[in-house]
Image 1 (cartoon, rainbow, N blue to C red):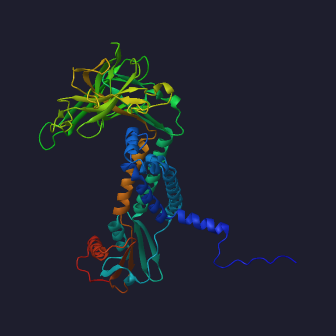
Image 2 (image 1 turned 180 degrees about the horizontal axis):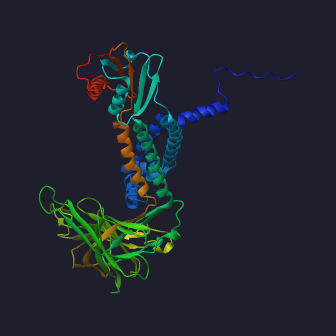
Image 3 (image 1 turned 45 degrees about the horizontal axis):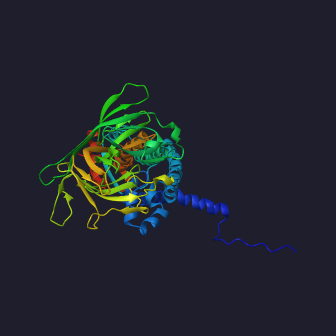
Length: 529
């Protein structure tokens, strides 16, 4: 005896029907709009939380300032929002939803373009706006006048010989749906362009001090990220040198200290062996090269420090980058001297471009971002810097686990305070000198394939959106019935907006007036429903 078969309930869906229902939900316009809003909301954390590949130093500082919250945010992908799995999932779902929504609507629109205007309703008085009048003109003259008044609308004229009635059927406003489709196709184009740039593009950041150069190789980047389909072997072989970094600030008034000009004067070669060329990089004016663009995204100060050890040998003589903390360019930096004898030396401290003292016991602060009264303040450590262990270290962090702070004769931390040209002796022998002050340029180097596609998509999408909002799709009918035995021709007019508007009755009055003027009938008897 066979097992009883389970009867299907009326409300149950088969697997195929359920998948079809899911597909219809995903490709509905409501879902597409929801996903677009969700994508915008998901992008918000990237504006408030520092992102890896954009500012790695800011990410490090965030971890130092928020030791509890930062690991949680990192596990959720908030430091790489735009490449996180959840952001990518929303992105892909939105693209599928838009494509699944647009393709059927294109088919419907193509069918509507080939369709004839709909026939006139039997009773015009039931329309939102209608009117009628009598005229001495013939039916044919009424139809020709109606054709002229309607202009570029799609028109069809149908005769009914039995009732001696002729109908003019007109429809206009097809550009509204076209604009709507163009807008949604443009969104897809923007998404595709951004995806191509993310997959095949690269972006890196580098800090270059005045007088130093950069070659576009992976080892010279401070920060570097690339798409999964980009090969670092394909980095274009350009190079450049920062000849001068110019920074100007407002020197008086309520906007004192506000930046006025950031400019990096560079000399570059696009390919090895080519003649060097000069260029001025400033905000929104990058250096565009074959395979990448160089943007100026920041600047700061790099004091040149010279250190001698207890043997009298110069063991450090280089510009040290001090990273700014705020708009006054109060900056922090680290100096590592692994070649010092008998012990390695480490210095950590601050740089003030315009140092002022706020009191006897209060620490100095920077009153102005320009280098009016530059001052370097440092503290000193001795011991093992940890550089010989082969573990990578940040050049902006001093590892103090194996180091001992140096104190003065009173047992207080040994403080170093230097202005340009000053030298200070170190405990145990040796000295440290502030030789001169240089500036550095923080540059971002990026290549974004198909960059023009999102720009074109946004521009065309705006035009499509304007068309979808401004164009008024309307159906208009004119019915003319010839009179008998010399009686006048009866003309009836009705209109229907496919997007309801309150001004339609007034526009029907205007249409009737223009139609009568075309007929040359200045005193007709008229009525409007």
